[in-house]
Image (cartoon, rainbow, N blue to C red; front, side, top):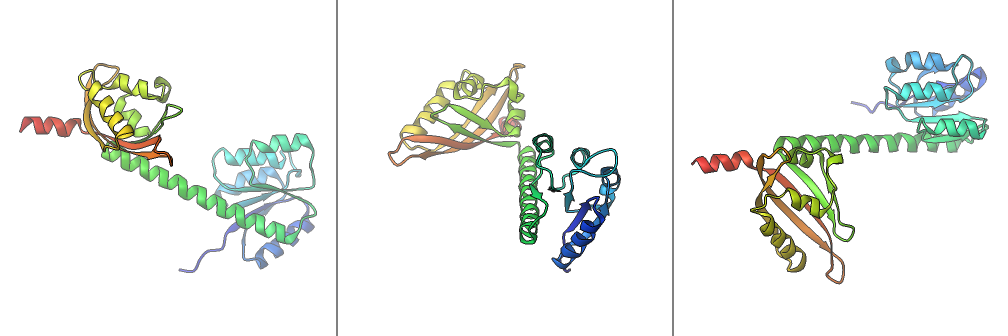
Length: 259
């Protein structure tokens, strides 16, 4: 199947410039999703046109300007935006920031600059979309496997947990201090010293960190988790970071105990 050229929505109230942009962009390998002279028309029609990028003038005919049109569009749609404008007024620019445009292109513009800016805006948006999709897939895999990932910055004593770990521990992020001590407080008192020894062995004796232990949730219930991690050291052998996983093995442990 041949590759489909990116579609660009033009929102510009100068008919001569619109005609020129249509011709230039078509000759540059893009499709024109539509052309509108007012923000209202753009907002009304954008969801049906499915453009890959919007080229938006700021000052438009109609009741709303390009910034307000972009704000309304971005409430529901994730479409990269370029402002094409002759205005550099600070008030315009401050308002425009909230719509997170990829760039501002000032009129009169350079054709090569316009072409490169559109190219990089589309590329950046594709990369961001791919990253979001990868993160969503990873979150789904962690949820299905009841396994979360974590990072511990040892010097700063800060922990970063994935969403699945918060689910395993029955916590919301605002309920957790995100440091080593706060984690140890949730380790069952019968296992706490053994976990501390395993961590120290990994940090200072280069032992594997691979351990099953219990945790006590705030509601009093107990779970069994399996943890694995590796330690990153600097050139002097000082531990800098631990990166690991936590898996909820409570049901598996109960099944083993019944055998």
